[in-house]
Image (cartoon, rainbow, N blue to C red):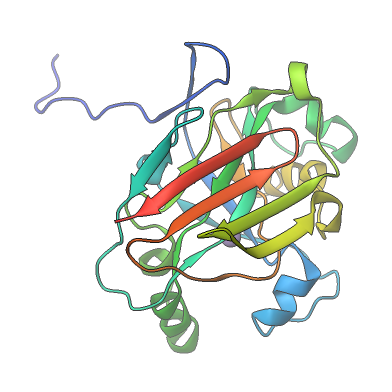
Length: 232
Ligand code: MN
């Protein structure tokens, strides 16, 4: 049997310092995982259970090592927000993974942006509708090269930041996360069977805001380098 249309390409992310690629299956994103960001979004910063939404695998935008790339301003928004995040990619899957074993499932880490049509997300919240129009847009997940855990370990602390045209907008520490990477993997695996190729955006710190065409965003995480995108 043959496919009746050309097969869609496999979404994939480059590995830092190598010609190899990490194939992407699913993209999970955690919401409100830094207390100060939960407050700025009108939420309660106490340690309520994490919540997740998803982006399609092909919503990721590859940002090659050391290159500035153009990032297309999406349609249907007047309030397009950056959210810099630690991105975690899994080499192993499973169900009901214990916290103590969760990091054994991680292949590596990268810098990513959870780009958000905030006006559409806010409208969805008000109307109690799903978030896809705000969160799952085309190219809404720029991600830099993946740094294997065998090289960088499992970063639990270190600066995470985002600048726009050189002005610092977001600056925090990975240790400010409400739910650790291990806890996120364990929690997610109680709802979904995780698999190799799964990607987790681990949440954004405070300071989210809008960008407009012509501005340049630089997202950085200590030990994982930076990604640079010009909004066009
Ligand atoms: Mn986010």
